Amino acid sequence: MLKSRLLLFAIPSVLLFSCQSGDKSQVSTAMPFPTVKAIQKELSGYYTFPTEISGQNNNQVRPKISGYIKEVYVDEGQHVKAGTLLFKLETNILDQTAGAAQSQVTASQANIKTAEAQVKAAQVEVDKLVPLVEKGIISEIQLETARANLLKAKGQLSQAKAGLDVSRANYQGINENIKFSNVKAPIDGIVGKINYKQGALVGPNNPNPLTTVSDISRVFAYFSLNETQYINFFQIVKGKDLDEKISKIPPVELELANGKNFDELGKVEAGTGQIDPSTGTIQFRVAFENKNKMLNNGNSGKIKIPRYYGMQTVVPESATFEQQGFTYVYKVVNDTVRMTPVEIIDRVQNYAIIKTGIQIGDMIVASGIMNLRPGMPITSKPVALDSLVQTLKPIQ
Image (tube, rainbow, N blue to C red; front, side, top):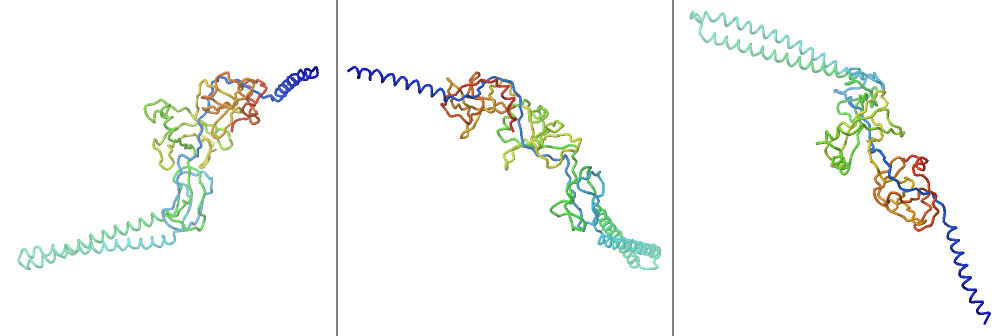
């Protein structure tokens, strides 16, 4: 009997010991993680849009006549003035044609002289017959015949003069074509790629221009807004119409392909105001002064339009993660993490600006979130949010 009582007494002791052992095991598995409190912070950032650079005037150089390239006087990348001779086309056939046209002009001038002499002779004949008819010496028929010959001679003179005009126009046209064999720069600018070399047969219908001369003293950067972005822009920015709203956009930055900003600030100058049906976007143009000629046609980059957010709830960018198209953070409640969905306004300077999901003062796991699972116990190691953000790598 005593043995049974001792056994019953021992069972609760064992159970108690086992429970205590289990609690200690659970506590020992709680890993330490850095945590921060969600705070309010005043931030500014950028609307960022991909862009492509174009010179303010890109003029394709095409020949106005067909011919073989005899000389190329410039090189790619060379700066030229308007009127600089770029190419010379072969004109042997044109020279021969011009010689024939000059001969035709000379012949037409000779025809005029002959016609003028015939008119003069016919007029003399009429003048001679008039008094004879008046005196009845000859019949009226002879005078009418002479007058008809005079009219015919005048008609031949008119035809000769018209022939001279035609031959002169033909000769002038050929000379103009000979001038067109000298292909000159239409504007001041930089010579682009030369698509045809010496000896190539070129003409007005070639698929590619001889080259392109670009004025890059000032360049344009084009970017596009989709329909939603455009409506938001139109509703948020003050102004009675598109032009006035554009005038209120602050100076913008241009981030180059190497991640650094261009030296000059740009100004949004114009927008199409019409949605391109093929892309569903509206295009805007930004102008940049290009004093050192650093930017060229085809450069790419990002347009950065300043954006002011005001006071917002923020957490470190490193505290957020995505899963199945939604963004989450791990909120700490009673030393246990809860996977909490959040809506993010933007990501700026390594901060995530939170619209909904958490409140100011909520404790959030700041980093190492890939090692967490919902409901997992942790040991919080509070850190200052701003100090943590400064140690993070810049967001790309």
